[in-house]
Every structure is written in C-alpha cells, then in structure tokens.
Length: 340
Image 1 (tube, rainbow, N blue to C red):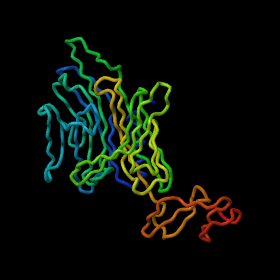
Image 2: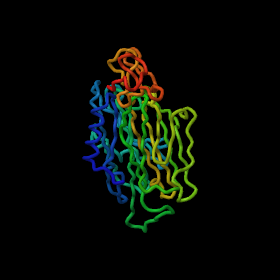
Image 3: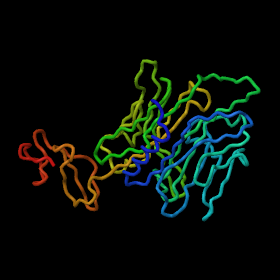
Image 4: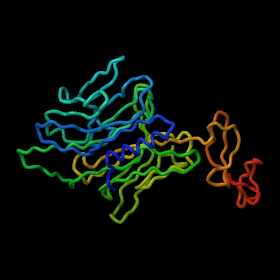
C-alpha cells in the first residue's frame, strides 16, 4: 500500500474530524524514517490536529524511545504545564540535546547524534481539555544512525522496516457492524499483531487493556494466524490479520483502538510499529423522543430510543416477510409498509 502524501492525509483527516461530533486528537508523521550520521543534528518530524482547546492551553507533548512498542517505551522529552507555565524537560541522557521546533510544533530536534540514538521514537500529544482516549494520539519515527568512519554492521535482520496504515477516525452508528483495518507494509508471515486500548485518568496515567492478538502463521502459505480475543471482548469482537471487527457496535465501544505489529525478522527497532484509530459510536436518536424507529437502511429492522436522545444497544429485526411499520409502531406485512 502506497503511503498517503502529507497533503492528501491532512485533507482526509480534516474531513473526518469536521464530520465527527467528538473532540479527537490526531498525530501524523510525514516521514516515518529518518537517517542521520553520527555527530550531526537531525529533526524527527511530527504534527497534530485538533480543534483549539476552550481553556486556551496548548497540548502536552511527549517523546519516547522504545524498540518494543509504545507501551514499554521510555520518556526522553516532555513539554507540559506546571501551573499555567509550559516547562520543557529532557531525560535519559538526552538533556541539552533535544528541543521542540516550537511550543505548538512537536517536531523533535536532536543535536549531536550518537550511535546509541539509533531506534524507534514515539511522538505523543495530549489534549489539555479532554483527558480521555480521544484526547491522546501517538505515531512513531525510526531513526537510523550511520557512522561513516566504520563499516556498517547490517545485523542479523533483513533490511527495511514495517509500517502500519490505520485510519485515523472511524464512525459508526450504534447497532451497526464496523471493521477497523490495520495494513502492514513488508510484514513477514511470522509477525504477530495485537489490538489494545488505553484508558487515562486526570493525570494521564495510562491503563492498557488487551483486546485481541493474532499470532504468526506456521508457513508462508498461511493467510491467517491463531487469533485470541480477550474475554471482556469476546461477545461481539473478532480479529484477523487484516482487521479488528466489531459486530453490533455498542455505545461503550467508543474508544481509541491501537494496532501493534512485531516482526522479529527485522533489525532492532525496524520490526515494531503501532498506530491507533478513534472509533466514534454515534446514536441515531439525537433529538428524537423515546420509541422505536424504522431503520433507514433496512425497513425490516428497527432501533429503540430512550429519553435524552440515547439509543439502546442492538438493532431489532422483524420476522421474515414483515417490515417495521413506523406509523403503527409494530412489524406489519411488507405490502402494507412504506419504507421511509
């Protein structure tokens, strides 16, 4: 799959965010891999998109380094609020070597590149107004460090890197099925893929919850892999190597879902990537009084609204040969029903 150009990607994201009633943070990286020589300076590109905060505060921006995924990565830089003032702090041997392009541009500038800087870096941006799953997003950049003075060790892994392609936002109505795709460029058939969610408290402390894992195939002819869905999600979730599938989406399925791939056939840092998709589950009942309503896409089905514009989970279905009669409020013979 060819990667989107920055212009096309920004246009798609802007359209999706404009249509969503939810406040959603979206992070993008225009170049997923950057190469630098030892001793040089380098920029790790990153940008974000979200409506301006009502508080007027800028987002918190963190950078992490970790070759085994974002969950186990180590924080190396943070721009966060201490009271009403934004303070920049660097950690783990990156003191005096890293800074941001600006207070609102999360691109990381790294000076005096060292051989030990080689690896995968994660740009994470946190909304100042919404401390929830939709308020945080992250993308990774692979930094390849070259020392011109010595012969390069190619390592034991194959050349290249994995790169995931996940939609930034998906929208679905309650009761409808949805598929969250996760395509991987250059993934080996022995790679593993996992889906998880991350919950946050008011201090952005994270709690990870595994949704599903898809294990490696036993041969290159395998088109799937051993799939395990966590018990809390087994009632209406399933997974393949290509996607996470949710049947009859519920209101509480509104979350950010992370897809992470691990491919050990690559060299250090090159075989791991993770990206997320924000799933906005919307109600068809906004502005409607409590009651049952004919489904707009299938007259033989109906949905139920509660007070306050809430929709009951699930879609009702009439028996064979009947359709839901909106005027009478029950399933009726198909010849007597007008599809709205």
